[in-house]
Length: 263
Image (cartoon, rainbow, N blue to C red; front, top):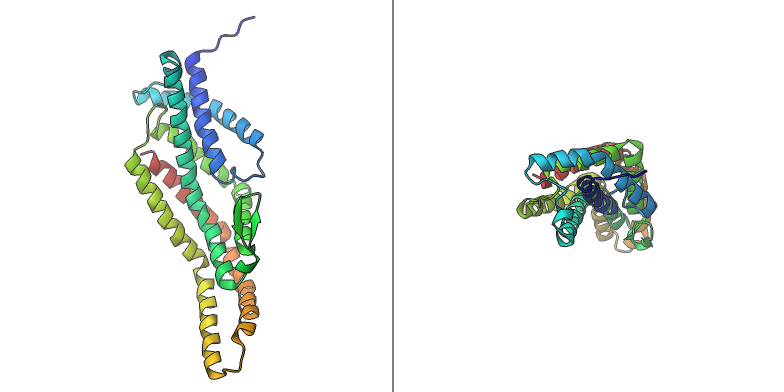
């Protein structure tokens, strides 16, 4: 019994799988080290098989039919593979920028609340952060899986094969504009998430400073740390309860950013 596989279809599956694998390695929630590399590879190949007909049809409609690199030679095929790695990594980095706003908000709360002194290295996420930063990051990962938001992200990745077919390179100007805009939006979103609590902690510092001016004998530092920790634990719950709505909004923003890069 002989089984013949068309080289064009195999190449489409391989190139689509390479783009998806590069995306999964960088983009949350799949980039977390709790997800084994074997699972990422199997998921990339499975999704590559699923989107291969769509990718081949989009490439043919765009005038860049996939399946010609193998026939053209090893160099051309390796060039296409490298191009898909760069495209997948760029798309994953765009998603990372969007969801880094939550972790940045937690880092701001740690800084203004006095928790930054207890920061430690997290070997699972390969980041250095304190309690609120880790809590916000892990909660975001859980919400991405619990709310099926990861399916929206994967669906957006599949749609990139229509906007940016196999064999075509992304527009560097559009990519640069999307990355710079995403970086700005990340800082704005982090301030929006942690802004109310930061304002309260700042007012507490101002109040302690005025109290020190009125009563110089009072040790403001000894009173300041417990007070700020109490305010952070009391009022931080309010910002924490808003995380489901924040993750939903960031998922929509990441989908828009994915499609914006490929236009």
